[in-house]
Length: 367
Image (cartoon, rainbow, N blue to C red; front, side, top):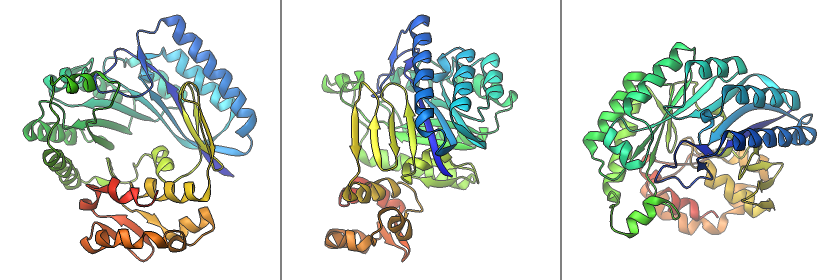
């Protein structure tokens, strides 16, 4: 049976972070949250009629926003509806995103009862000044309280989200965050460079000269330092911005990077099912992939994985030989092969660690 990942979007937050460009908002009332959960349940039932028998759900990701802002009863209700509407595989990976200050023992134990077996907590930094600069609602101490509480409640698969190249950041602060993270031994670590996006408070502050971006050279030094320290601690660098202990890669996110089927439920959620991309309101989109779309997306997403892409997988997906489709790109790619930034393994392509630094330049050649 075909496999399907399900993403459930919860757009509510305690407060909107200064850098956040995701579809989310703060200050929702309890009534608004309850109404939104009911709409999710209605949508889930409808999608179940379309996909429930044809697919087996093997990963679920509840993201946002801050999903843990909802009452635990709402989360149990949502997952109960999911089980009733879809075929949920035994041992499915079920992740919920959470921010410190929103988790309680009651919520965590309810998540476990509901079948949630993976927790992704947004720390960003162990430096409270950096957290304040980012507009985060928590402190490092809040995070530690929640992390240890999650362990006590039986969570043995936890991701920590980190951010570098923050205004006011230094290599010393970044290394301190990395070392403290490693001491906690989370099963998974995600680390992202701050991107100043249009429409965010940080963008306005940048235009007004109130903040400065970290130089690209420093950004890259921080990135490679993270990879080095995490590898030394036994983590596998399996995707551009993600490291995991053995067997703990995020199975849901791997679907995105491998062009597998996933269904997004909730405001602004995106889906890719049977070669069709569609996005929920208010970000409406519907597009059937052409061969060119699928070929370009396969490379663009697949090269995010450090193992890269396989020519056999490309042929299975498109029915075409890889270099037949991209024969006219070989000239543009030649300098990157020569420099070792792009590697042809004979079975596929992958980026070297230094190739990752210019990944967008290389990936753009294929799309």
